[in-house]
Image 1 (cartoon, one colour):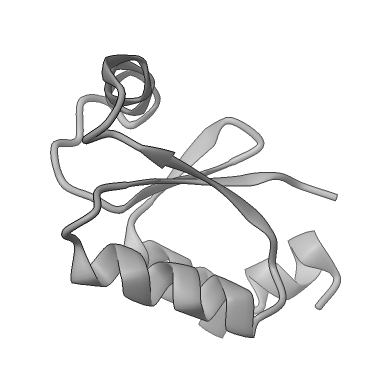
Image 2: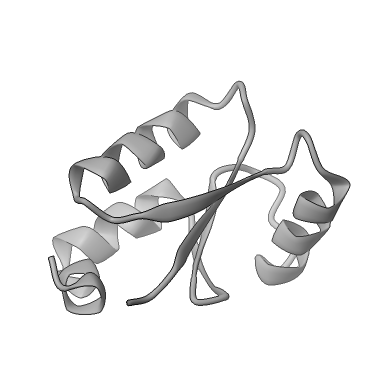
Length: 85
């Protein structure tokens, strides 16, 4: 099963919304807080081509974007195909 990573901060309502949706869709994820770890911030910047906003998401190490891109993938059925939902 593919692995999804969400890069987030503690004070990000869109990050919270993204995590809530992933849970609702029964998709497990790993959260990496960029406000608590310089290593997580560096990883997010490298994987996302230096995006500065959160959330940023990756699937199996491939950057997919943020909340908008995730919901578009869901609406297009791409998440169902990846995660067997």
